[in-house]
Structures are given as structure tokens and as C-alpha cells.
Image 1 (cartoon, rainbow, N blue to C red):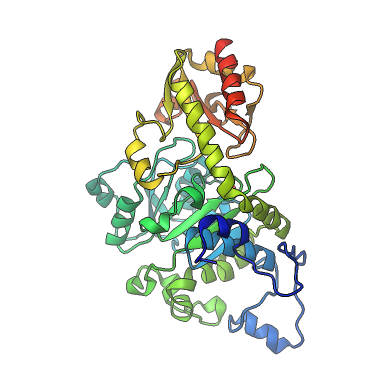
Image 2 (cartoon, helix red, strand yellow):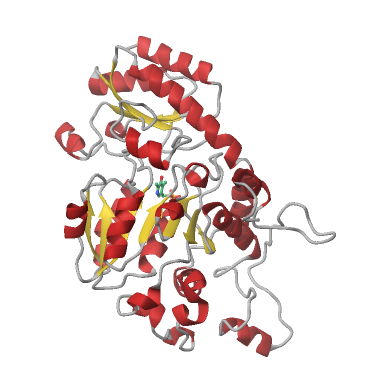
Length: 427
Ligand SMILES: *Cc1c(COP(=O)(O)O)cnc(C)c1O
């Protein structure tokens, strides 16, 4: 499939039926799998043979969908998880343990920020956050001898900053560690971070990949290029025998292409069990079949709305990397030549009250803690997700009181702009 163009991979990747087999991927709704002899099953447990034994670790439906996303990103191995949160936790915890350190962009999803700065800190994994705009010197200064990974988001949710992937990859590799990039917002349709030096890509498939607000999920994809053995002293989990798996050394047995995902499946999925249900994987695959058709439409709607907002007298500022006035326009031209995503954020001159009137008056855009859906939705963080903060704290967190995040869906842009114009008039 990897010889085909991206759209063809969206539609037909991950699964090619044999003669008389189902055209659509089958939902293997089974927790367990039957074997004729215990020797056969033993080989699976020893990772001596390929096959399924329990859906907490692996399921055929999930593997077909993971294979499609792997083909879209241009990786060598991939897996699904129950959510984007699980994907980011697994990707980091697969190489970091107690006593280790992570360098992360400060401009990332709030859930991931909490995961790294609070929950992983309780596991003894410390972190240093750097600005996505950090210079090479500033990035360099964030590393410590115990740093094991660098983390960032291609387009950050909700700040909409664009990561200079090459710069972050260069810094990570100079310190012998991989770059992990959460590519949720652009999806591989608009950016493939592996082409710019990223080593591991994660997704909240809950967003554009599903695209219909129907199924929670996540994915982890390995580029298969990072040489764990060249830095064996940093990554004992991959480069020394795993006593919980009969002394297998993942990087030796599965090589650069397979070690990361094999360890993540056989160790973390076994022990934490954050598996996506095969029903959700099936729904996710329906979304993937039209991802290359939907993304340009999300971008077209967002670009039109961003331009309309920018020229409106009641709007103070607009954040969208497709606007030539945006701080990230140049970086976006490099990494996102076909556009980024359908999410725009903006501030109203009338502040908090104006934001509240605007959102109340919208008819098509619903108030939701969600983005990247076929239906337009919006959120004022100050009165919802960040409502415990005062105006001063909100400003510091980069989500000023008047900020509205709007995720443009797949409706006709004329209707969306009319809806927004009406809500602005009501202020
Ligand atoms: C939503 C989101 C997540 C978390 O994903 P869930 O599927 O909600 O767990 C992680 N990263 C980004 C960029 C997101 O937008």
C-alpha cells in the first residue's frame, strides 16, 4: 500500500481481503482466541510466533486500523490505544522510568501537560517545559543527563502554535533521545512529522481521524529509524533483557523497526490494558476512509472564517496559521503547505461578556468541550475548562478571558460565516 498516494491509503490501507473475504474490515468481537495445543500458545507468549491470544493486548480489527495509520504516517509499526491520553502516556512511559526526565514544549494540550507535569512527576519522572519558539541554545539548555525524550504537538491544542519539528528533532538527536510528536490536529493528510525527523508520532484519533464525534481513541506510530542500541545505556527497557518476557531484549529481537511498538504492546498494554474496543476501531476506520476528503474542507472553512473574523471590527485578534499576519505563518508554510486544521481561536474586543453573548447567539456552532468534529463547535475556556482561574491567571496560561476557540466543521462556509456574523451583531 505504501506505493500508493495518501488518499488511496486512507481508503484501502491496512487491510486487503483475500478471495471471498469481507470487503469491509471485520469486527473481531472476541476477548480470546482458540489454540489446538498449549505449545502453540506458548510460542505466542514467548513472542516466538505472531498471533492473538487476548484482546487486552492485541486484536485483529485494531491491528488492521493501526496498520492503516502506520501507512499514512510512513512508519514501520503502530498500535491503537483507548484514548489520546493513553497514547501519549504509553509513548513516554515506554522509554522513561523513575529517575528520568522529559523535555516538552510548553504549548501542548492541557491533559498532556497535566499528565507530564503532575501524574508522571508522581512516578518520579521530571520534566522541563520549553517555549515552542525556543532558540537552539535554549532548547539545548533544557536537557539533562537523564533526559529520555522530547515531546511536542505539530499544532498545539488550544494555543494553535506550530512546532518547528526539524529544530526539535535536531536538539533531541544531538542528545541521543527520540522526538515524540502529537500529530492530532493536522493528521497525516496535512503533515507527516517523520519526514521532518520525528521518531514517534501519537494521535488522539477521537479528533479528525474519527471526525464524527463518535469514538474515543488514540494511536502510536514508530518511524522505525531511531537507533536504540546506539544509546543502549539510556534505554535499558529496550536494550537489556525483559525478565517479565523470558529475557527478551526488544531492540535486539525486533530491531529498530519493531522494538518500540512490541515492547509497548507486550509490556504496557499487558499491564495497563488501555485497549481500544474493536467496535471503536471499526468506527475509526470509517472516519479514516474519508480523512483526505474531509481535511481540505475543514481547512477551507477555517481559512474563510479566520479571514472574516480578522476583518471584523468587533474582533481584537485571530490565531490561525493560515493567516499571513499570524506569528506561525512562516513555519506553517514549511510544515503545513496545504493548511493545518479546522480550529481557529480569536479574542473579542468586548472581553468576557462579549464572548458569552457571542456563544449564546451562535446557532450552528454548539458549545462543546470538543474539536475536530464534522459539526462546528466552540468553547470559551474562561467560562468552562479554565473557570477556576481569574483574569490574570488566564492571561498567564495563554487563554485570556475573551478567547474563543472555534472548530469549523464540514458545513457550508457561507452558512457558518452568516451564523458568526449574526452572533457578532448581537454583541
Ligand atoms: C484531545 C487531545 C488529546 C487527548 O485525547 P483524548 O482522545 O481526548 O484522550 C491529546 N492531544 C491532543 C493534541 C488533543 O487534541
